[in-house]
Length: 289
Ligand SMILES: Cc1cc2nc3c(=O)[nH]c(=O)nc-3n(C[C@H](O)[C@H](O)[C@H](O)COP(=O)(O)OP(=O)(O)OC[C@H]3O[C@@H](n4cnc5c(N)ncnc54)[C@H](O)[C@@H]3O)c2cc1C
Image (cartoon, rainbow, N blue to C red):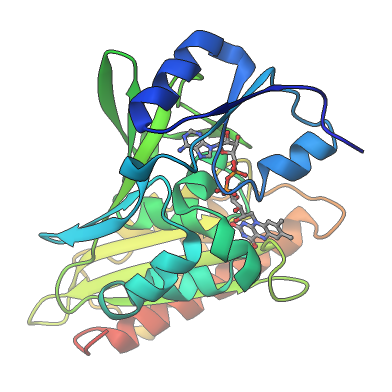
């Protein structure tokens, strides 16, 4: 199929894009990498009256790290972050390896993936695990949306239709923290059936001082697991305790069943993955990345 007719607006700056979004209101969509939006247009699952193409906005390019915060601007491609993150944020680099395939990551943006809000996507769950936030700009002002305030439902965020996400920020884990990442897919590059990421840091006595556990593919939004994290915080992460934390985390999930996997399968796999990523995070604690 072909997309329904739309007005094409080639924005040349973030301000230009914001003005176009104001003019068209609910009727407009931002076009970034197009890796999700173009198929949706072609299938007529989305029929915006206007497309605001931000690919010519030089002020939305690039990424930078400063004082433990990694800022990724709206035009930075997933592949750029995958390369940039290898040294300083290996959890992000590893997760990105699982996003689709290199040609898609060469085009798809980090910000586009995060605001597209597919519940089976890797990056939204990482935004939760890395205490992330989205910078949203509309005419007349800017606001910052914390990751735990962003995700509302499948493909739905708290971003307003006249807001442009200009950047996302990830807070890098504390010094000496370890990480783990795992997902189950039918084939490499497919969206995950279930996925899980963890970050752990320990004090000098070996007790957990920092715990993040996030899931994707287990419901309508990515999930950060309060029960899984609190089962570990302040305690020695013995194998038994890691098992208990993984079980507690999986028990609190409410996954859906679909054509590809039942809800029960997803819960069982979530518990197994949580236990593996926590063990991997523990193993990496105190080692360089
Ligand atoms: C075959 C295939 C396999 C894939 N597999 C995976 C996978 O395994 N894991 C995964 O996570 N993703 C996967 N994807 C999706 C891919 O990662 C997309 O690139 C990503 O979801 C969207 O990024 P984009 O820059 O292409 O955004 P676009 O497609 O341009 O936009 C997506 C949505 O976000 C909005 N948007 C984009 N940027 C902004 C902004 N700056 N401000 C406000 N709104 C914005 C758009 O209006 C649109 O609604 C796959 C895609 C394909 C085609």
